[in-house]
Length: 579
Image (tube, rainbow, N blue to C red):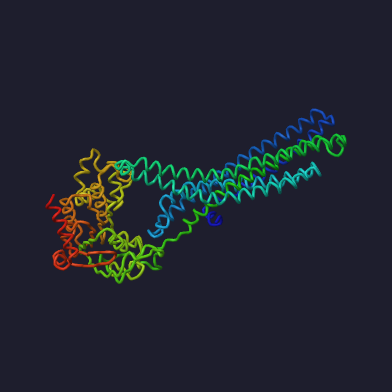
């Protein structure tokens, strides 16, 4: 897993290497300071002059300054490497998500992807910084301090042979029990983010149905579950600190007691005050190293689950692949479905589409009607390869859609959804998603065709009017018309309107359809609608039910031959007459 993650280091290899180098030098200097201090203590005890004290003092001052400087360099390098690593990691994940097919995205919830891009990457960043600094410093300090302890303290240093394994066993037990809990914690993070996301996105619905208390309860439940899991993990990790302190004090008591006894009984011949002072420092360094090392293990334990979740995204390959030699030009807007069957995933219990055979000539206007769940949207999503057919072939411009370069194909297919999205920015910026090079006059022309120019012109700032995130400061009908104008600017060979005039009145709907016939006569137009009036003038109407095509014909033909269509038409007309 870490090998996979470390591919994102790239240009930050240099600081990633320099940080451990600086740390190594820092540790060597820090371990030399107690040794020099012990020599100074012994010189003072032997009655040395001021010049000797000054010489040793200057040496200690220089070593302390060097230690401080290399500590600063190691910290700066580690911070630069870790922050750059996390930036690349987020970039790689985000770019990967952009290449996902809808099938890939369906495997991850949006709240889970947000958690992985934020919390999980932050955990891995912190762990990486500790690995290239603290995880290098602690073992080196431990090794050097233990070696120097045996040099300075002799047999007294044998206390480390007991203390270190005892701490190691305790640390292993703590991590072994905490890791499964952290795995559950991140699932709780996903649930919490999902609750927040749903509430913020649907805040108008929440307030209109007075469901604030329910949403508070749902959020509170997710937050409480997260708190409970974290509390269980922290209770286990809480043993780490007291365990370290206990071993530190035991160590100090042992060294002070037996060190003082040895000095007193041998009158400083076998063991002197300088050695005792240095041994105390090395003892402190050793156990502090172990304590820091335990923190590294805890952080890695948390980051391991985060890393696994990140790798799931990084290793996910798009289910849609470009062919080896793709076609970059779509000849025309003809569409053919040959024996197409489709389901959204291999685990799906049933097919969303069954036995689809349909031929659409370039430039035709096709209406698609059907009840909710009849898979109208599923059908049209196969045209720009948002999904691939499970069985059968979908052809556009005479070629299998899989033969095209995906970007080239999608540039010739414009889709306008019922709940299409406007991004934060000006109206003009949103419209230029359809054509980045469009002039102001082209923007206005597209908006006139989509019946949007009138209301845009009434805004004080016109096309420079700022759109809030999600288009919350315009009405549903206005949003749909702006999205239609955006699609028209692409001048595509195929235009798909997926119930995209549901929020406009029938008069405006008719004007939009008339404009489409005049402006894009050679473009194939597919109109998915709930209202029969929206597809009355279509060249043909496709009637769908339960994922199958049950009838195809003109309005007049279907009135004569299809009972379902006739019932829908009559019920809608009666409803209109009643109003």
